[in-house]
Length: 80
Image (cartoon, rainbow, N blue to C red):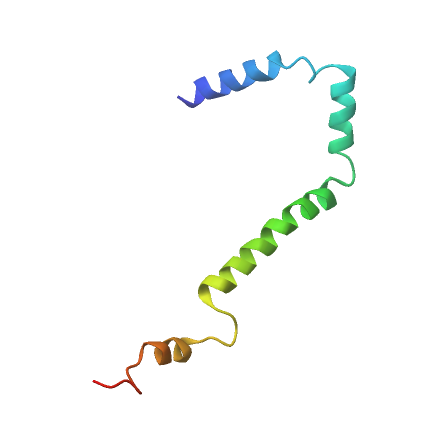
């Protein structure tokens, strides 16, 4: 099954009219240059920040431990 995927992938790569053209090679050289690592890090940074924000919202921040959650679920102060 994986051999079929590799062959189909290579066929798709060969079908690309821009990949082997002069313009395609210039674009590839512009993307995969010396600044590739820094550019990749800057592109991934917003996603990492979003994951941290969502995790803080979901799991609670540094000041919200188990005692805070237990106080919310306690029945103290309620009339029975």
